[in-house]
Image 1: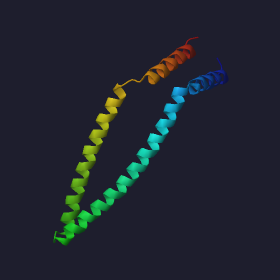
Image 2 (image 1 turned 30 degrees about the vertical axis):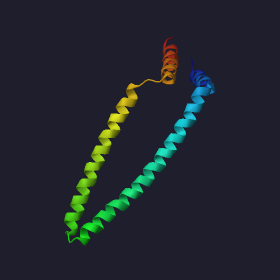
Image 3 (image 1 turned 120 degrees about the horizontal axis):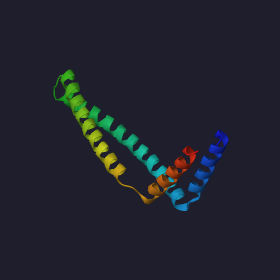
Length: 120
């Protein structure tokens, strides 16, 4: 099988997968969720930066030394980042353990394609 034939097979396989209505709907749903998650994260980060600055200003107002305030806020922010990173890792592991019917079908199609491509 030449490289051009292999590319044609991949393109045909992609078209047949895309034609399935359920997959097409789920892909558009995933795109919407990704965009909304990005915008939510952006707005949350803006609010967090404003909140950290407000805490710093309040700490300075109550006569805490600037370096002590920076260190305290930095450590608490780093601690929150570690907690969020661990929660994200746990959520990703749970997500990877679940198998949806669509993922199982696509996995089966991809395995069959690779088996047919690699066997002479």
